[in-house]
Image (tube, rainbow, N blue to C red; front, side, top):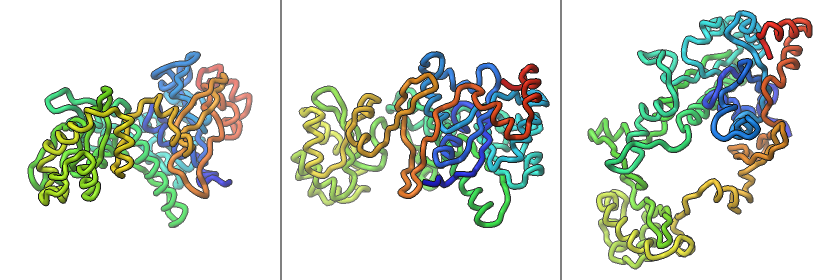
Length: 397
């Protein structure tokens, strides 16, 4: 089955999460990814989190469907090779601090002049312009600047993060979306290449729903609310008799009536003031207390069965172990397994979103460091003698 992005060549100069995640998304749907890594350690992600035989298992998921070329971009010889690869590329992905590529002679103006069809995705903490453009920016800082960190956590507690680098992956998804839009404009509308400027904080800010509109109209500053969804009631995490928590989303009008009937609170179900969400939001604490009084006397599994029979959305809070053993994940094919270069089987998320005709494919495992250096450079017209000389000089590895 032909992959939608087959024939699209992507030069990935980024490292760690945001840029490589964007490239991984394109790779899953057929794009050819040439990943440039520095000689020596390569992408720092290779050493992040838990390692097996010296390599991160996260790397196996993030770098599937990619080819690795070890190239020193800090020296003129390496920069010249990168320019030659960019001449043949459709897309270049980078997530260095703004100005870095310009110092290396690989900035947008230079590469656009050499290859007008090139699409350049640039991901950074604060964007390519503005007073903070030169500051280092990681996901945690972007999430905080976007307002997400302030509202995440328990009231009166220390602001907390989600536990994963949301800012990076959200920026990566925005970047992949930008590339697809730019490819469509170039190839279907007769356009040319363009530069896509993605800032981590803006990507998260784009997902903050009513946060700013409510402040602009009412002067309301949303506060942390723990497990609840402020202004939407009832929607919270409730204690169970076995020490676990259950998530219940009873905020639909008809769902709310069914939920109140199930917990024996016909008075709340029939209260006209609670018939719509705006009325329920004003009495969210009262409603949550009624639900918690019911849930804390039953175990999680019993609660799930009762709520399912009443057609009230509810769920457990999944751990990684729960995900790995869940029947629905398995039935949907949401988990896939890849064997690494050393034979380790690594489970990871499958390809999303699911397309009926062109569902994407995992064509190859994550590469070892510099695994494709020679084949990629030979295909770019660099001779074997030149490759040998460049390797002796430490420009490639």
